[in-house]
Length: 377
Ligand SMILES: O=C(O)CCC(=O)C(=O)O
Image (cartoon, rainbow, N blue to C red; front, top):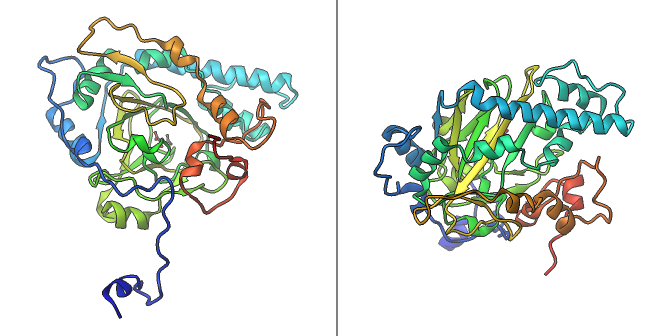
């Protein structure tokens, strides 16, 4: 038997199917941008990472920044979420979908009540993503941008993908499996750093669904083969076996559970494998993930929308153009471009479909994958 043939035999002796390639799989790897610390700003600026944190971010693909925000800095975001929940309750109530608006319930319980009466309320909130002013301010927070300069260099722009996570207790729809963020973006995102800050709005822990990362999983500079879609959701998934084989993740030693307190946040990149645990607490685990990259790189977002320039060595006086950013609602674009259904405008429809579904093998069909239509042209 030839060596090649022998190599195709699995340990059990069966002939292994030759691995199929999907549009998301490419042969090239790009470790350099993920492992190389850029030239650091000459000035010391407030909020900057320590040398140890910086080193850890590039070496291990993540770091945790504790006690960064004062409660009053995050309160406007909590208030904005409160308002979003309130608007949703009004909408559901007016449409006769719920009998009570649960106005007495607080931020960490009200959406759960709505969800109980109208299943999918958490998805509806997740889908309605006009970025509130408080989140815009957080996105261009000066001290956060000082960190981004350390990670990306002097040219810093907000990346168009952001998410408010509406992680209600025990909701399968909010169970996010292992993935690398580039598995959601277009392939042009694979060759450069997109930095994510994952910012919780309460203390997070193993009970309420904190984050896990597989450290070192970014080191090969590779996006492993993902599959679609997890359980009843629209999420891509990366098998642990694949993480071991393709990304050299040592599952016993590299999986890190990250309880993060209110005021702190997690930093990782678009190749860092990560997931969140199930929320088995009584509280809603609210968080936002915000992203940044160099404006000189491709947005890696299927030409759907662009980011927002925040810092540039060429111009010290930048006013971020949020109007331009807000003029594109990516979820509306997805609905128009990637939805099979004729009427994707039902305000209570909880189907989410988007370009990432066309990138990977669909191994689990559900209403989201069924609704997917590849973009024309
Ligand atoms: O918030 C979560 O549960 C998951 C977040 C995530 O996957 C991300 O920020 O890319």
